[in-house]
Amino acid sequence: MEELTHAVWAGRQELTGQLTAPLLAQRFAAEQAQRQAPCPRCGREVEARAVPLRPVETRVGKVEVARPYCDCVPCRHGFAPLAAALGLAEGRKQFALQRAAARLTTEVPYETARDLFAELTGMSLGTERLPTVPTAVAEGLSGLDVAPPRAAIAAQIAAVAAGKRRRPVLVMALDGAYVPLRPETAGGGRPGRKHHRAKRARWQGEWPEAKGFRCYRVAGERIVHLRSWQQVQNQEEVFAALEQVKTAGLIPAERVRLWVLADGAAWIWERLTPLFPTARQILAYYHCAQYLHRVAALQYSEDSEQAQEWVEALLARLFVGEVARVLRDLPHLQPTSDAAAAALANLQAYLVTHRHRLPTGSQRRGG
Image 1: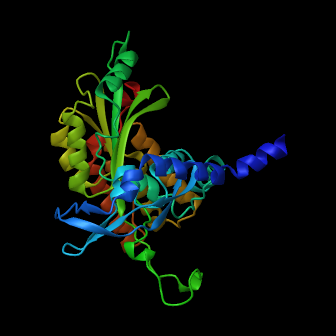
Image 2: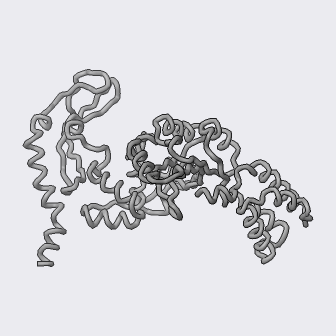
Image 3: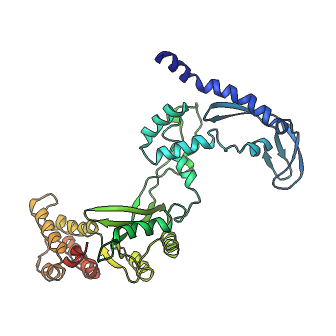
């Protein structure tokens, strides 16, 4: 039975694809016999010049679609009326397969998604093609489109706040990260034999910054994700998305203790403060640690035990709220080089600028 069912399973795509073709011909006989149609751009009646076969890949296998093709010469637009009637995707993989690929790639790594896609659908989709599917699906979506409903967020907050004296803590974190992208020119080719790796187009990767924000509530030692939005976008776009979220009431500032968490970039705080004037501000702990490590690497040898101890001691003091004492002690450190002196001055200016955003004991006790 195992061998028999495996043989049927292996050939299922060919069998079901052959069954689909006559059903398509029966249901869309009029469209397949159509020999003229109005141009979608200019409205002229255009004669069909040919009836080519277009292979498409569906959940039931490969199907050859005979479709009349019209070419409007005045407006230089080609179209197939049957393709619109069938709702065909532009590529060979049809929408049901694209949905399956999009779901897989958002849950598991690309290599795993590739293997699962082939096993579950009987179709192949390479790891280079897979990332383009969720990108195409997400194109045009806004932060509101991917956000949970306002009622769902309110229900979560109400459930946490029930029976508690203090409002729950809601954190909104903003950050960015550089991500590798292939430029559009990567899809081109070079002269030479096809399918030879050495003859593929030469291109250099790009590293744009993906900016975004994430909202989560604090539940003891855990953080519970509420919503997030990350895109390759500029400062204006990320704050436009954030303002949309605020206007839609998806950040219930009146029902929570709202905290905003970000690094030391001035543009973030300049935009965040007027947008959320009552929110408490916290400087990202690891971003602060980078400044300390930079001073230690220049003041002492980078991998020395002394450098590590100095960083850990200052981080501990800052963590318990001794910002004022640290600022009094830093000028007593004698720089060992001009570079160390510059890094030390930069650290002092950084701590002075963000001293009101460094954590305190009362904030930690407040959750």
